[in-house]
Length: 343
Image (tube, rainbow, N blue to C red; front, side, top):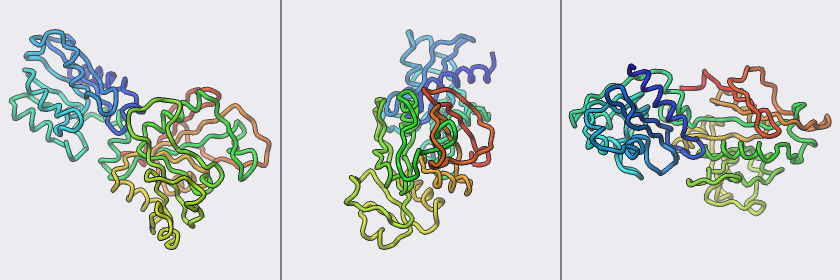
């Protein structure tokens, strides 16, 4: 078996990591091989917990098996100590002969530094840099390569394409299982964004519920260009940020921030705050603005089995073919990818 075959197995390990659990950490897989046989495998399972390489080593029954072995890992081992220590420093103490890496870490904190540590320890290091490994962590890669958050748009509609039964009122469309899926998507994002109209109508919590998470709640962002919201009407806290073009509102509201160059300016400012990914949950006009300005990388449309009477708020017209389609509860979830807007 060649390097690509073993690396593909490592990529399968990486895919075992669930985005809503790994959060802002990349999904990574590792395979230890000696004499064309697998010694152990591992993957990064949860934010703040052991990385893939360490989990692979933890599965080794006899340390002597690793002497002279090759480690295949989808992403460059980290050099920084962080929450779990430097993986590169740990690797060099296991007596390996060679390390094969799927791609370099785009994070400047680690980029090429893990490789440097391994080479300095006398290990042979090869980097494959194949396109396949760019697809494992689209949000992570996009953020560090473009210095902008990865934008995922999300819309829920009735079977006949409506968002609400009556314009200006909230309508519940998804069932429990569909809600769980939506909240898994939320949990994998650094922030959740809505428009002021959605805020005024729904008074949403914008929190992750239905599932357990061991990382922070996403940041809550509202686009309120005209300054329509009032502190006294909402239970804002430090986890909220309201972007506005109204200078008076920005001066009066403790959670408001003035932005002068539209949604692109908002994304630039969020990147400065290390917000890797944003889930834009509507309403339709805000989603349409992101689409029109080509400021999106992925879109989810949940089409439920409910039929609403005509006269309600319409969703958006979108003719692109979905990359993937699946059933979640009472909804068909279609996943669209903006290939021009990716890395």
